[in-house]
Length: 123
Image 1 (cartoon, rainbow, N blue to C red):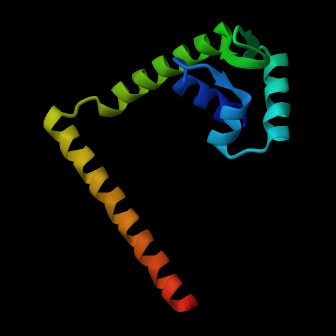
Image 2 (cartoon, rainbow, N blue to C red):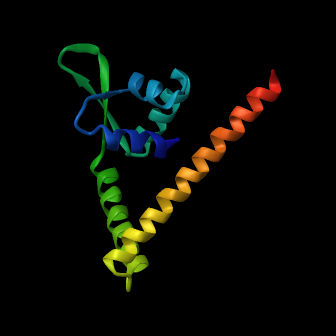
Image 3 (cartoon, helix red, strand yellow):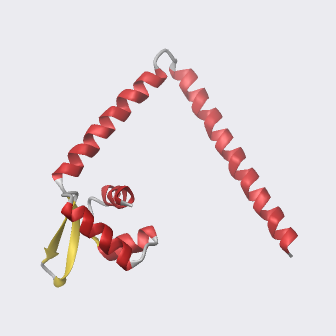
């Protein structure tokens, strides 16, 4: 659950993020998010900070610790991606991406077709 919340907060760094935003975005209950946030605060992953315009609200912010870990992970992913595509031409990589997109499209079409068939059988 921590990773979901962190991911959401990373995607919304330019905005004030409040617990209710996390609840809504992740379709989680107030108590579950509250417990998760409390644990993340105690681990030093996020901070609760008051906002000037409403003393009742506390915005959630990622700590420098999390941002540094995220930066390191992104660097490792970039290095791994370089390793994966080593020796491929730009054309080959474009072709590979095209194949993957077509496979994903086929999977989505097949899943939709199966769902439609189930609906017809259930009636």
